Length: 448
Image (cartoon, rainbow, N blue to C red):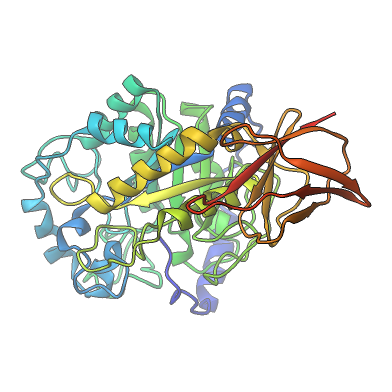
């Protein structure tokens, strides 16, 4: 994932090189989503809640020595690629059980999983035929956890997406090295087109070795500074490859810009759509389905020392805030190097699952409601029902600027009636006070 220090200015001669490269790109027909792709987008918007998994060689170091992001430890600790490779020789997550993982995530109320098939360190967590630097060929584990997870997802009805880092600190052909590859010990030469061919070859493997998948979750193109970036990364060709192999597969790219042709939804890293507390979510909100990703603590990969876990209430309220902005919520955990999930995260997922059993009707299958986000909360809507999510409210009267006629109002948690009255510009809900321990008081409004 991205960090705040990546704000260096572009190098002029690299911009010119990118423009020259753009002129050599083969023509790719304009992307037109298939019916199966459009159906997958609708499914995605209905799903609302997913699990993010950051798991790789970096998990073994537990973030000790990193500057805050454990999956960045190769860069943060200036570990040369030749020495970082040694981590593979003792990566052996013998307690990994894909069915247990998926069952736990399903009980948490998640409908899809995104796992790091390859992160910035260049190590493939799958059986790649185009590189021996992978979990099957380079570790004593010698198993393909991606294959096992894909099979478990099929058995349990969960969709699986693959995170793929376009940035690569290991490949000698990833050159120019970009803003974050200065300490990898790689040569001062390389073949950019050869690297992109390698990238596409691994994507082909991910799209042909593991059955039908949900999509590809890209990250890392911000490591390069070129204009136009979509030509630098040969996006049209790569996206066309993905959609030709699996037309329904959804493509998202965490580049923090408005979507480019060929992308199927837009993601926001650690910010609700429209917000920019992290400093890099500056892209405008487009017309595609939306998602926001978030960490349990302050890091994506497993950390031994980061105990600043967000409360269940905070995470539930963020999920609700995302749904009220017509977005999914992708909540991360960093599995431990032994293959188990962090117990603190397991407990949090279980609590979220219990909350969704009561309030899921106001989340799943909904779209952003008729009232834009307010200080007191958000609205979601499904059919003729508007759900008013009261997150911050201490008064006994709440003005809701909804102009449609209301037939009935009830509390979602127990079905009790809620008094309401018509006023200029909307309605007032009367006598609703948020009880102790209720993260989100949901009022169901049945429209006339």
